[in-house]
Image 1: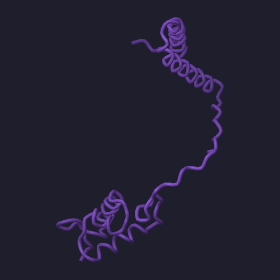
Image 2 (image 1 turned 30 degrees about the vertical axis):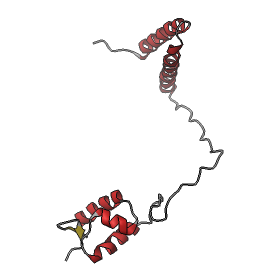
Image 3 (image 1 turned 120 degrees about the vertical axis):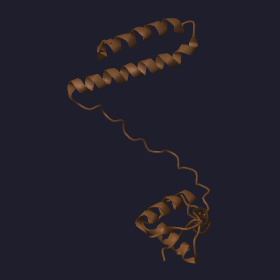
Image 4 (image 1 turned 180 degrees about the horizontal axis):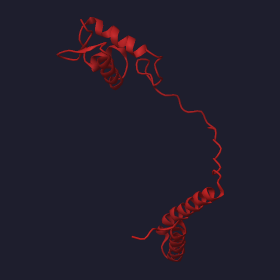
Length: 141
């Protein structure tokens, strides 16, 4: 199988662009493909140009939001913000003081998502801070 050079690929894309432009006169549906091909050609030639010149492509400036996002409807028990370091662990261990519990029972009691509880329990079990019980997890004896 022959190795294709970037110039061969670019030439092939340019030929296809010309074909699509001709067919576009009769078929509007090809306009999306034409735009994708032109974008691919620009990225391809731009990437080659930056490698040849030994410089990086210019990054687009970050645009600022012009509108403020709508407030989220978050209940106080299920916040989307990250808990402070060690806070979830503290709540999980406190919930297990009453006896063995499942991740969903701990989630209901603490207000932390069950998926976070499950991941935390796995880590705590590996560290030996909790043990698997018949049903759920418990504190070691």
